[in-house]
Length: 266
Image (cartoon, rainbow, N blue to C red; front, side):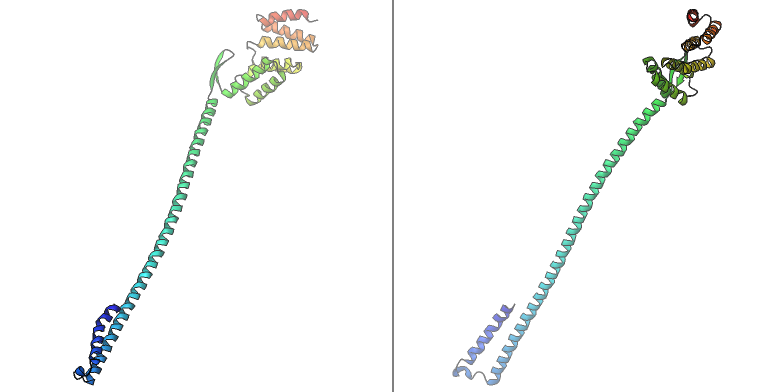
């Protein structure tokens, strides 16, 4: 804008110069007042042009400053927005990590529940009673109870009498009213006899006969008592026991064997 003002004022200044320097021929056209007036007018126009140029420059400076301020505000806003975006990305990353961990935790819990369910089902199956035959009668017993008896009986038949005595004694403590009680007493007597604990065997066999006098193995138990007594040199006691066997169970195989055994007792 300052250049525009200068182009406007230049012709006027040139005209004044030409008027003043035209020489005597044209000097008469202007008097001193007119010359001064022209100069003053020229100066006023120049001053106005300068003021206008300065005003425009000031206005442009203010506009540039305002624009710079707006740009700075926009730059700070963009920086804040970028920081917010980074924070959101971080939160999303943490959220994804949390979701993944939660998914793993849920999967672990579900797997543990399945495992626990399988264990529980297995335990329930073990607790479910099973049908079996004891002394010719079909009965229902707990699986653990049956397993304990079968294990102890297998130990007796395997010849490990010390272990068998321990297992049968433990069975009596755990299952006092078991359907296997009579058989446990009988096999305990056999295990004690096998380990040559004759007094213990006599006690076990007597308990068996007293609890189950009609049991199919009661005659065998009496014969076993007589054998224990013979082993302890109680011949008189052995003879009395065989006599009781012959009197109580005369038709049993044990009675026939007792007769043969009686002939050897002296």
